Length: 228
Image (tube, rainbow, N blue to C red):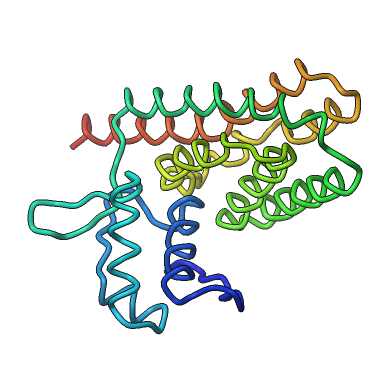
């Protein structure tokens, strides 16, 4: 079961439930094809069914969840073609968002990004895949949020919602995926104020990380289909 973040004092129960479920999907705490039940989530979160039902409706409308004919809800799966399209959309949006945000990154934000990168390294070292995914998204969000009034982040997060469930399909390929620390390359580019190098590092991070995991998943599925 996913890990629920603490509820902020300013949040209503409805807002908190939506935030917890959205982040859970985005960070790969649900697998593609997993059924999602109102009662099960309400029990896990210690809330009534109403805020869970409303959160699920919002997430279905955002494409993060899929409503089936029998009115059941599940985490949608992606076929290889759709996966590649979403992946390339991430590259296009996030490289541009990084470029636009770079002039606004100060020493405090740079320190936060370094901390997220260290958290990712620590999670990788102990095999905590869930924490690795979270730290990765926190790093990217911290970068893109630097530009005031950015409208690109919600678009980027909508793509994270679609790709997030693949992120936990790491397993034995995880160490291969992160042989090069693209976050470190991005940090160097920011310090040097090299926008092109930053865009290259972000694109490589997405393609070498999420891209590798997704393609490895599809390759395993294809291999199993042949042997089955």
